[in-house]
Length: 164
Length: 127
Image (cartoon, rainbow over all chains, first blue to last red):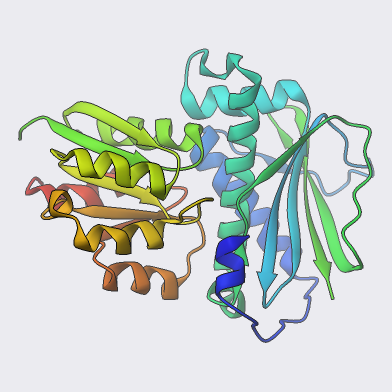
């Protein structure tokens, strides 16, 4: 958040529902490059996001809010294994770290696709929550969406939550 | 090309490992890889001297990559050591700021070993 504060106030950019396809594209690009496997967008999913690992990256400046990436423990471990190779992911802290970095790269890739956000929106360092029974209070979310994916037959969810 | 002693600075241990692996896949012969999790830790390592290259994330707690980069300006042990900044954000402004502060190159996450090779090799006189 330190870097975010240093860059001061930016003109707000209004939420655009078409960003969902850009976020989906960012997820596919990042996971394909970092984990070596292409996730499928599951647009027919009506499931609520679930899973014991949630990574979050804050957005500030022209767009305020956060991007989250949620999945199960086994999926987080699989991500870390695919990113690092071998049994490097046997440590739960490594799996959390990998999930946080994936969320960070998804957030960066997403905002790089939107000209008005590239230089006007800052990212926080990632935070990872462990546990599936929680509620998140982020002030006044005014807009956003959640996108579901299948990654090697495991569900994952990515959400954009925008504050006013 | 001689064996290289490289400093990798990132608050994520996973990213440090990925950067190291990408450097090896890009063909760099690494004699030693030193890791630091923020700019302040990295400064201590730079002061010890004998580094051939530094790769640093920008967005880190304690001391971010740009502050670290600016702190290198007064260090004798940092002279001639190329610094490559690693960024997630795709912000041209931050890249320009980094290059103005003395960085010799940058990489955007996620990156491939080919992109690492393209950005890093020229700084070492390789191809």
